Amino acid sequence: MKQSIKNLKKTQIEFLDSEIASRGDIRYEGNYYYHDYFRALPFAAVRRLLAGLDVTLNRKNVLIASCGTGIDVHYLRKHYDADLTVSDLSEKSVQMALKLNKNLRAGYVEDSEQLSFADESFDYVFIAASLHHLPRPLVGLYELIRVARYGVIVIESNDNWLTRLATRFKLATEIERAGNYVYRFSAWDIKRISRAIFYKCHYVCLFAIHRIAKSELEFLILKSLNYMANLLVPSLGNYIIFFIKKE
Image 1 (cartoon, rainbow, N blue to C red):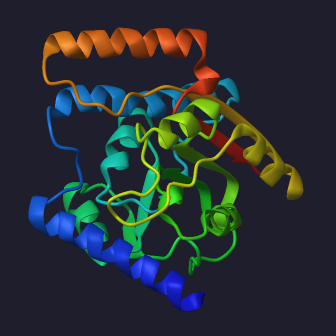
Image 2: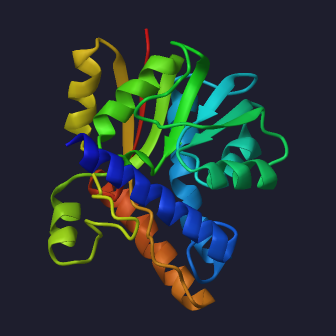
């Protein structure tokens, strides 16, 4: 089992390194503007969730775990004056994150399942769409909670009957190109995890279409459909954003 986990992590590193070597960054193909609109939706949900709890990242020490090439730095920096540190299992990813984001405090090569940081080293820990890349996502989540002083903010895939149906009919991914199984978190999962360690959890669900529009018309159609889905049935969305508050 240990060897299997080791091999899974090695595969992840090799995939990330090959993506960086071939493209210089980890991005989806297609029109970046249209992609970025939908990518920004979960981050907007993070801001609303934290604001509703009177939580701010301003002037806080924040770790962005499993950062990839640091794309998430842009979204956090745009709305918060936070002291940001990044970490990732891939050394090349960390190097690229530091290169693309000059205002980072530091970058570390770290396994999110076994961080070298002391308990409560950071005010907050943030991780976006990366827990499901870990061989043991729950181990990683507990480790992030350990190194956070006030709480952990997570953007992840949502587990519900619609996403399970989409996966069954190959409309959603179960095994990603990097070789990892896509572990999806349900609202009930988050509640039980938090209750087990006597912390509070807060969450929202939403749709954020992964498809990249190839034209302005297609973009407007997808945007409208996405808006209506979030208005009517957000709980069936493909994303869950949750905040585990340590108190």
